[in-house]
Image (cartoon, rainbow over all chains, first blue to last red; front, side, top):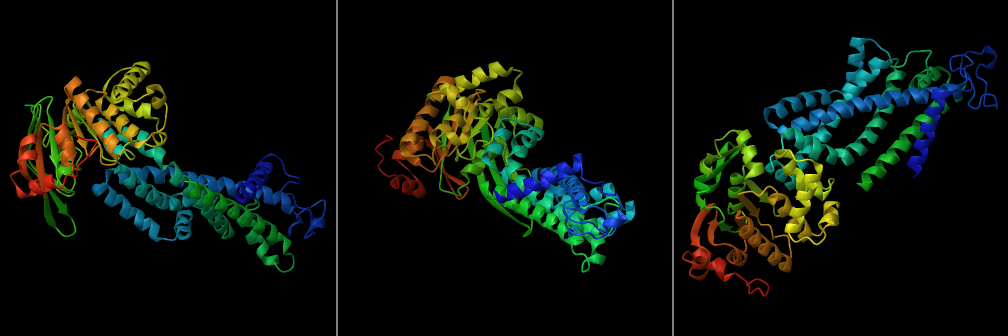
Length: 256
Length: 265
């Protein structure tokens, strides 16, 4: 319940950011530099006099878009790979899963850094890099589940009715993966938010002057003692986001 | 001769230990159309493996089968996968021990009963539905339309097993393999299911290969029986003979172990 409320808040923020912001998030105002909380600037202003509230809601939108795309890539390819290897087994499974292990052996941020190093930094490169880094864990989860389902009697009996492998996978196995995928998608989304923030903090993701939550944190670093507001609000929003999705993920996991 | 099994042996290879374990030795079995044959034996005696290999459901990895399984003139152990798949849908059907796991929990019962029609025939939706409801009625389900539209978890164990029989019989197979179909059910339902199998056999002429560890059930249903122990067929013949005059010590023990059962006679 709390999870749903927190998540709802963040989603509303993101939607708001997509439609309209109180100020242009990139507009600088020298007079408002480091100004504190006021009616005009509910979260204060940063070192260039940009409205932090406007930047936060646009940042939330960016972060969510990136995380959602990353999880989408991971889930889509992870499910395909996991289903094929789990269902058919044999040498194909052996080869793909060892490759998978190799990818899994690198920390995902390191792997993403390598990919960004090859393709240059930027939003879409970040999505691609993190997406690739997320595939192996999804592939593993799906493979395990498919292995379990594959040996259940109802798969055996539709096999006996002469169903083709394609039909068995599409009609009888994939729908049954839903519950497992649901909770791992939510957990994966959390990890993606953190990874995005981390990568942007390192300057690899969203490029300035565009805001993203991680980007804002990294820019605020220099002024954290003189003007803590610049770091506090993006930080709080990240915490709320992660907490909301974690609680939601727990609930989905418990329900199934 | 419809089904002819000769010298069937099944070996499992342990990849890591590089050793072969033989689980079934030299099983011989013949069945004519309309026969009811039973296989009895304790857990691990190889009766289910034998059935699965006749149904073509044993995985082709790490498992070696020797001998012959000839069904309507086709050797199931050597034929092409496509031929096997065609036979599986049209001529050989199987029902399993655990009716809870035998139905996909996310798909309505009716759709699952129709599955083989969908794969093997060109019937349209309405025709399939009609056939499925008829099949459900044939297995004595009270309200076939309601059952058609329900999910597996809404049915009792006995009803699920009837649904399984309906979906196995919808294509009127020549051979129905029943792998301990009554083990998970209580005694009254057991008797009903056995009677249902008997009726089906009489009316449609489908041969039934009935696998059980319960010798008294086999005796009420089958004409002939194979007794298996540790992968070997220790005794086979007419059911009455074996039931009343068991020759082998193991069979004698099995017969002596039958409790007096008021529902099955």
